[in-house]
Image (cartoon, rainbow, N blue to C red):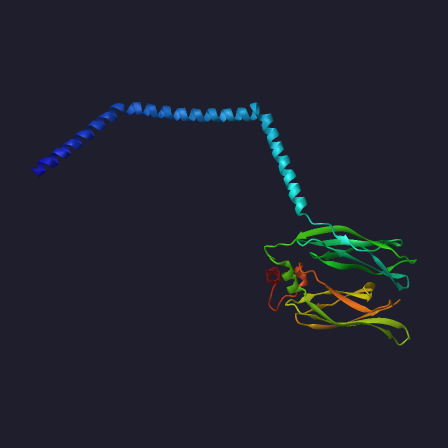
Length: 307
C-alpha cells in the first residue's frame, strides 16, 4: 500500500516537471523578447536622464547654477576670512627704546617687545633707527606671552643722540601645536628653569688705573635639559629703571650644572642699584638642545616635543 502511494507521488512530480518543461519550450522566445525589451527600456531611460541633465546644466539652468556656485564661493571665502581673522596672531607690542652712552661714540640701544599671543611664537628680523643711521638687521625670536629685551650693543655714531626706534621688518609666526604640547606653561617651565644667584655690579681698577665695571653671578640649570649657546641678558638697574644693558653667550650648559659668569663693562659706567639676568633660549628650536649620550637628533626631537 505504501509503495503504491510513493509511486503515485513520483508520477505527480513527473507530470508537473513535464508541464513546466513544455511551457518553457513553448514560451522561451517570448520571454527572451520581453527581457530584451525591459533592458532596452532601462537603457533608454538612463540615456534620456543623462541627456536631460546635460541639457539642463549647460543650457537651461547654466547661468543660475553659475550664480549659485559664485555665491557659495563668496560665502565660503567670507567665512574663511572671518575664521582666519578671529584666530590670527595679534601684533607684537614694542616698548619705549632707551639709549645708553658707553663712551668713545658708542651707544647701547635697548627696548622690550611683548608677544600678547598664547598660541603663537615668532621669528623676527629687526633693527634700530637713529638720527645717526640704522643699526644692522638682526634675527630674533619671541615665545608666547613673553616680554623680552631686544638690543643693539656698541652702536657707533659720530655725534651723540638720545632717541631710537625699533623696526620689526619681518615676522614669521608659528602656532603652538597643542596636540604635542597640551599645557604650554608647564611644558615651558620644564625646559627653562634657571636660578641666578649673587648677581652684583662692582667697579674695578686695572693696572693702568682705569676704572671698569664688572658683573658677576652664578647661573644654575635646574631643568632636565642641556643646551647649546644659551644667551643671557644682563640688565643694570637704578631703582626700577634700566640704566645699562649687555649680553653674553655661554658655550653650553648641562642639566643641573652651575656656571660662574663674569662680564666686564668699559666706558661710561651707570649708577646701579641692582642687577637682573634673563636667559634667552628658543625652546622650539631643536638645535638648541644637547642630545643625551647615544641619542640622535631624531631622538631629541621626540624627547623635546612631548607632553
